[in-house]
Length: 260
Ligand SMILES: C[S@@+](CC[C@H](N)C(=O)[O-])C[C@H]1O[C@@H](n2cnc3c(N)ncnc32)[C@H](O)[C@@H]1O
Image 1 (tube, protein in one colour):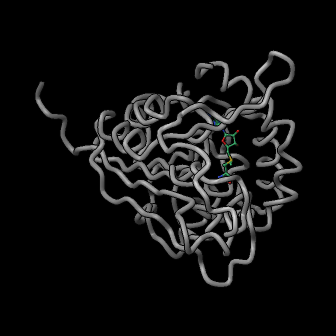
Image 2 (image 1 turned 90 degrees about the vertical axis):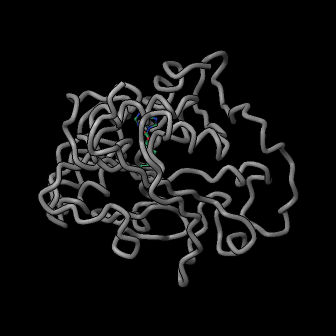
């Protein structure tokens, strides 16, 4: 299973499931909010992007572009990019209903359809990274489209989440799968790949960011936000005190290129 197979599958799967996904999670995400993770951490609280006023900001794997709308509301020039036309269609509807329109562009995060050095900041909240076998390809593309000194912030599934059963209760916190087993979770229709999620170890995630040329600024394992009563898959208030569900990485390109 390679990156091209999974990109094709996710373009279809997320398009076909866009309406159902937003019926289930739309209120929690907020039509023009930036929520980093099921734990409930918002950018209003976390301030991970820094000031976006006047900045050119790319949301990678943007879904319906809720995060891009948060950027626009906070004075940035946002563009959202996603592989699933169906998710972008929901986003265009929200552009109208919120009155905060943002450009939404179809594209694979592994081959971003933007020129070199087009953005000051790039981010994603669980977009693209959990769904590709090779997140390093995304980090390299983000490094290409960011200007020197540009910032990259992404949240994704914490690798420890994978070693336990896919269940929100604390009762099932028994290791059922080796941490180092990188066989993806995959669903097929006959022989055709329908959906896949990949376990990336912490070393894969951080090493890929460093190899793409970024310097690590911060690594966050967010705690459950008090008052958040939503369970999302295996993420829940019951499990959260026991084991992290999300990792957020904040990284920056050097301001000047090192001589080779
Ligand atoms: C869990 S959603 C995250 C988006 C948004 N933050 C949200 O919470 O709805 C995952 C998104 O990643 C997108 N995606 C998956 N693989 C991708 C790829 N290779 N390139 C770009 N987007 C991708 C999906 O289409 C989907 O919109």
